[in-house]
Image (cartoon, rainbow, N blue to C red; front, side, top):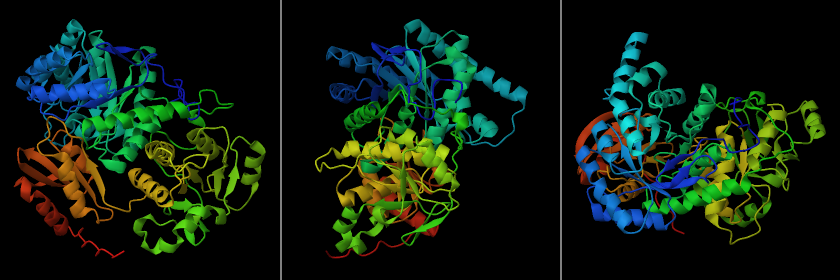
Length: 592
């Protein structure tokens, strides 16, 4: 990360070349662009046109639509024509998986084509084999033959491209040489970029999407570092997204952790918040997230650090090695559970019902904790702290004129690792009960989630939300989404699109209703097989559309039951969880 303008503290936006998608510029001096994707069937012209217009009217700047086959891609002509007749010039992007001929057809009609290097010219067979250097080179020559016609067509038609790697769909070739890793994601994209550049084609952007925010953050950081190493003319724009983020607060929190953390680092020129909801619901979330990052950005700090000077690896998650200490009867630090703090006022407001709060209990009152508040720029205070033979619980003091992420990174870089750290979402506790909760949620998720994914933080305190119960729920949900403290069922749910083989929103809610009491179980709900098998690697069980009205069930990334009628599938999923001894009965409801 030291070879370009990004550092742990400055938050300056990475410099990239502009790429035009129709009349919309990505990168360069352009603002961060907001995208979404149609949920309508691409064969339904009228529905696609109406949904695209609705998105454009909601300030969506780029609209993506899936094109499963060449025949379906042909209907993009009618869809784009209908959108243009309405008076909208919103650029349309064709989303391609598996079918090069669909991409070739789509390039006739759209302003941009998205290709997935993991499946564009590869038939994924999940084979384990060793590739000699010669065999690997032969594979790359074959891919160049398959990919070059699309590159040449895009050049001729002035069509842009996204080379979009997904953690869930890396090719067998990449998996066998690099593994299911951020490095594999980056190398997969670079292989296709080199082919594009061999034809002097540069109108493309990159993406590195994953459902796990830690994997996503590491992959994008590694990508920017590799692009910088390749040379100044590898300054291509970057699209950000957390794939299969889910719905509701959980989907918004996970997206804010992944996308917000990277935007705060200066990485990202266009974003999509992928929610298992109507596509138009994504736009206000994305716009609010961009606005928050811009509000929190401070380009000129009085001091700086390089990534080489911090005591953690930005490309490989490892929790900071603090000492274990006991605070108010709770162990924290080291590998202990990351604790949830609250203030005395909120504790008192909840005291009469703490035993009924279930999984959202406050654990430690900050005023009783003995936490030491310091300004991380105060060198004398840092020196006194590090001379103290005892480990101390430390936090950044309120009211200082630093953004949260750089402040805590500077603190973690300067104090001895033995001192545990209490993270805060803001240094200005809220006094406004009417504050927009979406913004509070997104800012807290960005700030605390980013630091947790750096490995920093032994406890958390939400100060931006006044409501006691809501602030505690937010704290716990951020810990869950960051993979730091799993206390409830975790869902990986993709957004709907034209490939989806069942109603994702209602099905996800049905699965939540049946399994939401299973603490620590991770369930993936996938509309089709594009990312299904790969994303199953992070899930305990998977529910995947296999054919219209038919569901396949997975354990990990292995399919174990096929073609189950949709109306039976949730019950069969429960049976599968029971077979693997992960089922417990839901507790009886307590009368209020």
